[in-house]
Amino acid sequence: MPSLLAVCVVHQLLPEAGSAGVTAIDKRPLARGAKVGPFGLRGDVQVNRKHHGGLDKALYAYAQEDAEFWEKQLGREVPPGYFGENLRTEGIDVNAARIGEVWRIGERVEVAVTMPRTPCQTFSRWVGGAAERGWVKRFAAERRLGPYLRVVRGGVVRPGDEIVVVAAPDDAPGLLDGFRSPA
Image (cartoon, one colour):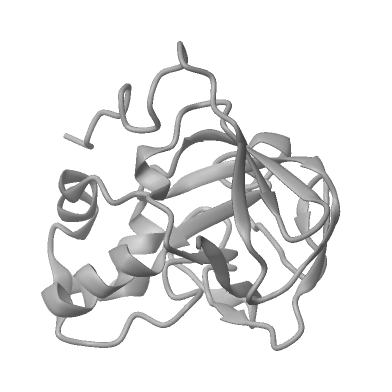
């Protein structure tokens, strides 16, 4: 049964070399879950709304199975929230989702898949900087990106909530169909 393993929000804003000067990539799990509204989880922040956040990027989901792949590749733990995700899933291939696919999480919350994550330099610096040279290209090449989600119906999500695909448009492109790896 696909489920929500963790619900993550920003732990603290950190200084960052990018244009905003700070980043909210440091996400950590909440013990009890969080309320979900049109712009994401209560208590979360997206510093650079040009590239993160907004209605079509209200939430970011990442699969535990993909995190375990990266743990082996990196030789270290990739705990929930480490890749900046709000939702750590288990038992659902998030990268096989179709654009427009709708998931119900728990009893009430519904989200729609909008686009894949495009890895950025902030993500690269967060994961390892010079120790992980070429991280953006490496991450993109593996095509284990995870989707951004739009909130269709709000409510509360909690760790352990079941995830059910309630609608999957047959004619819609897959999440990764149009993705182009960074040059």
